[in-house]
Length: 143
Image (tube, rainbow, N blue to C red; front, top):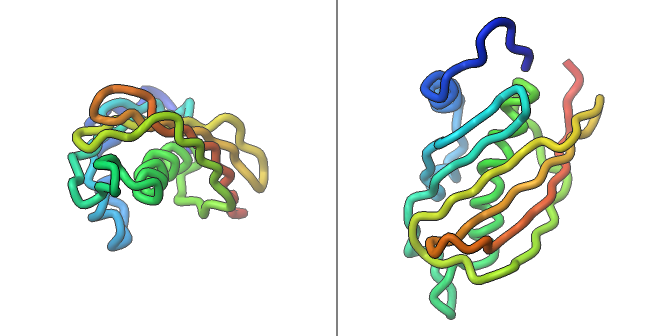
């Protein structure tokens, strides 16, 4: 997406994302955008606590953590490229337990080419410890 003139405000970015069609699965990961830089392809979100994501150890189950990271990854790519892009691959490293509660995640576009974009994301658990890191590749569709 190319921005001529002033960058959109956080309120405008929230409204833009809110106005997009949403798959049913997005209801599983309620979030609020708390920071964004569309030109840089960066977004930071806050997730509401999801007790249903609890694993046997009392933390966020790994698959749910990946689903949570898919949210900012998708939004970062959308803000940078101007359309929703399908994920080609995602590699996830679990660094610490992701504690149940309000969690923060951020993602950024590292590089965008003609057919692929490369991104990274991080998820902090409710204890503010970095819990999960991911890198992802998305396909850029021809216009």
